[in-house]
Length: 69
Image 1 (cartoon, rainbow, N blue to C red):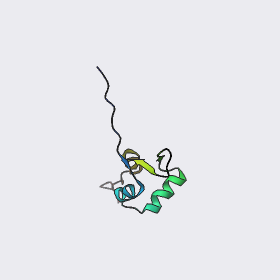
Image 2 (cartoon, rainbow, N blue to C red):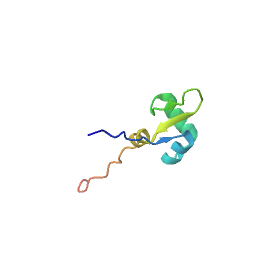
Image 3 (cartoon, helix red, strand yellow):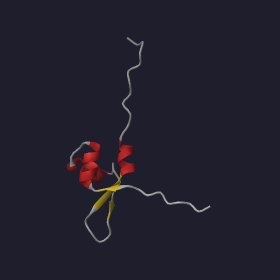
């Protein structure tokens, strides 16, 4: 059986910022600090970010445990 390639969804910096609810500058800072992986389109200055990498930035907020005072 042949394996199917899984398509990755790529976003530009503005779309990535809207996806996370942050500014474009925050996305640029994340990339510069190495927090968020990004790829440059060969031969251009355009940057693309995988949606999966944006999802990996999100972490659950711990809930308060009941019964502790």
